[in-house]
Image 1 (cartoon, rainbow, N blue to C red):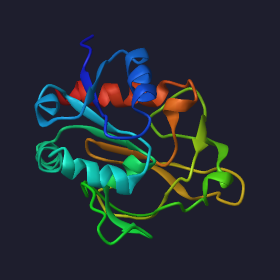
Image 2 (tube, rainbow, N blue to C red):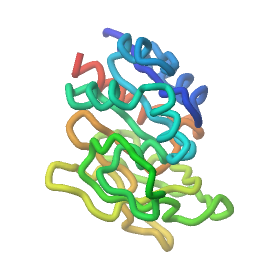
Image 3 (tube, rainbow, N blue to C red):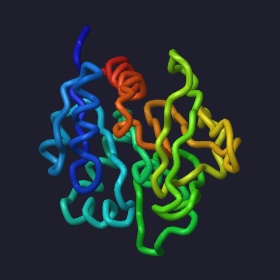
Length: 201
């Protein structure tokens, strides 16, 4: 089985954790900070962190246009937490100068579950991922308030006050979750994305 080359956008956030998770899932993982590095990968992960900071650094490192072009050309991209915000076509409670890649037709709300002190863990059943619910970790997480016609809802919170909230979606080769699978030791979601990249090569 071919091991896809998957980059992790290394501007800010959980870069090392995603790199390790992708490697454990059978991919060749490498950091991406420059357009020339983006050219060498088959897929890209946009990690959790601070979406406004990632937005500014994408411009500073001249990565915005190259990433936009690769997304338009069908490159698979997975965004977790802040990465979900970066992939959304509409962001509620964002900064006026904040710009993402707008690849997934959805509306997300920043910090929807509350601030860092309101971080929590919950089981999430994920369509297409076998083996039972994922143990999902939410840290200042967004949620999805609206999805477009071409967006598949993969997972929702199953219990607690946030039950029913959409926290995982896919639109063609673009995948996004509100939670941080790279921090839990469960590599099933990274394996799912690696298979998505492999199929697109």
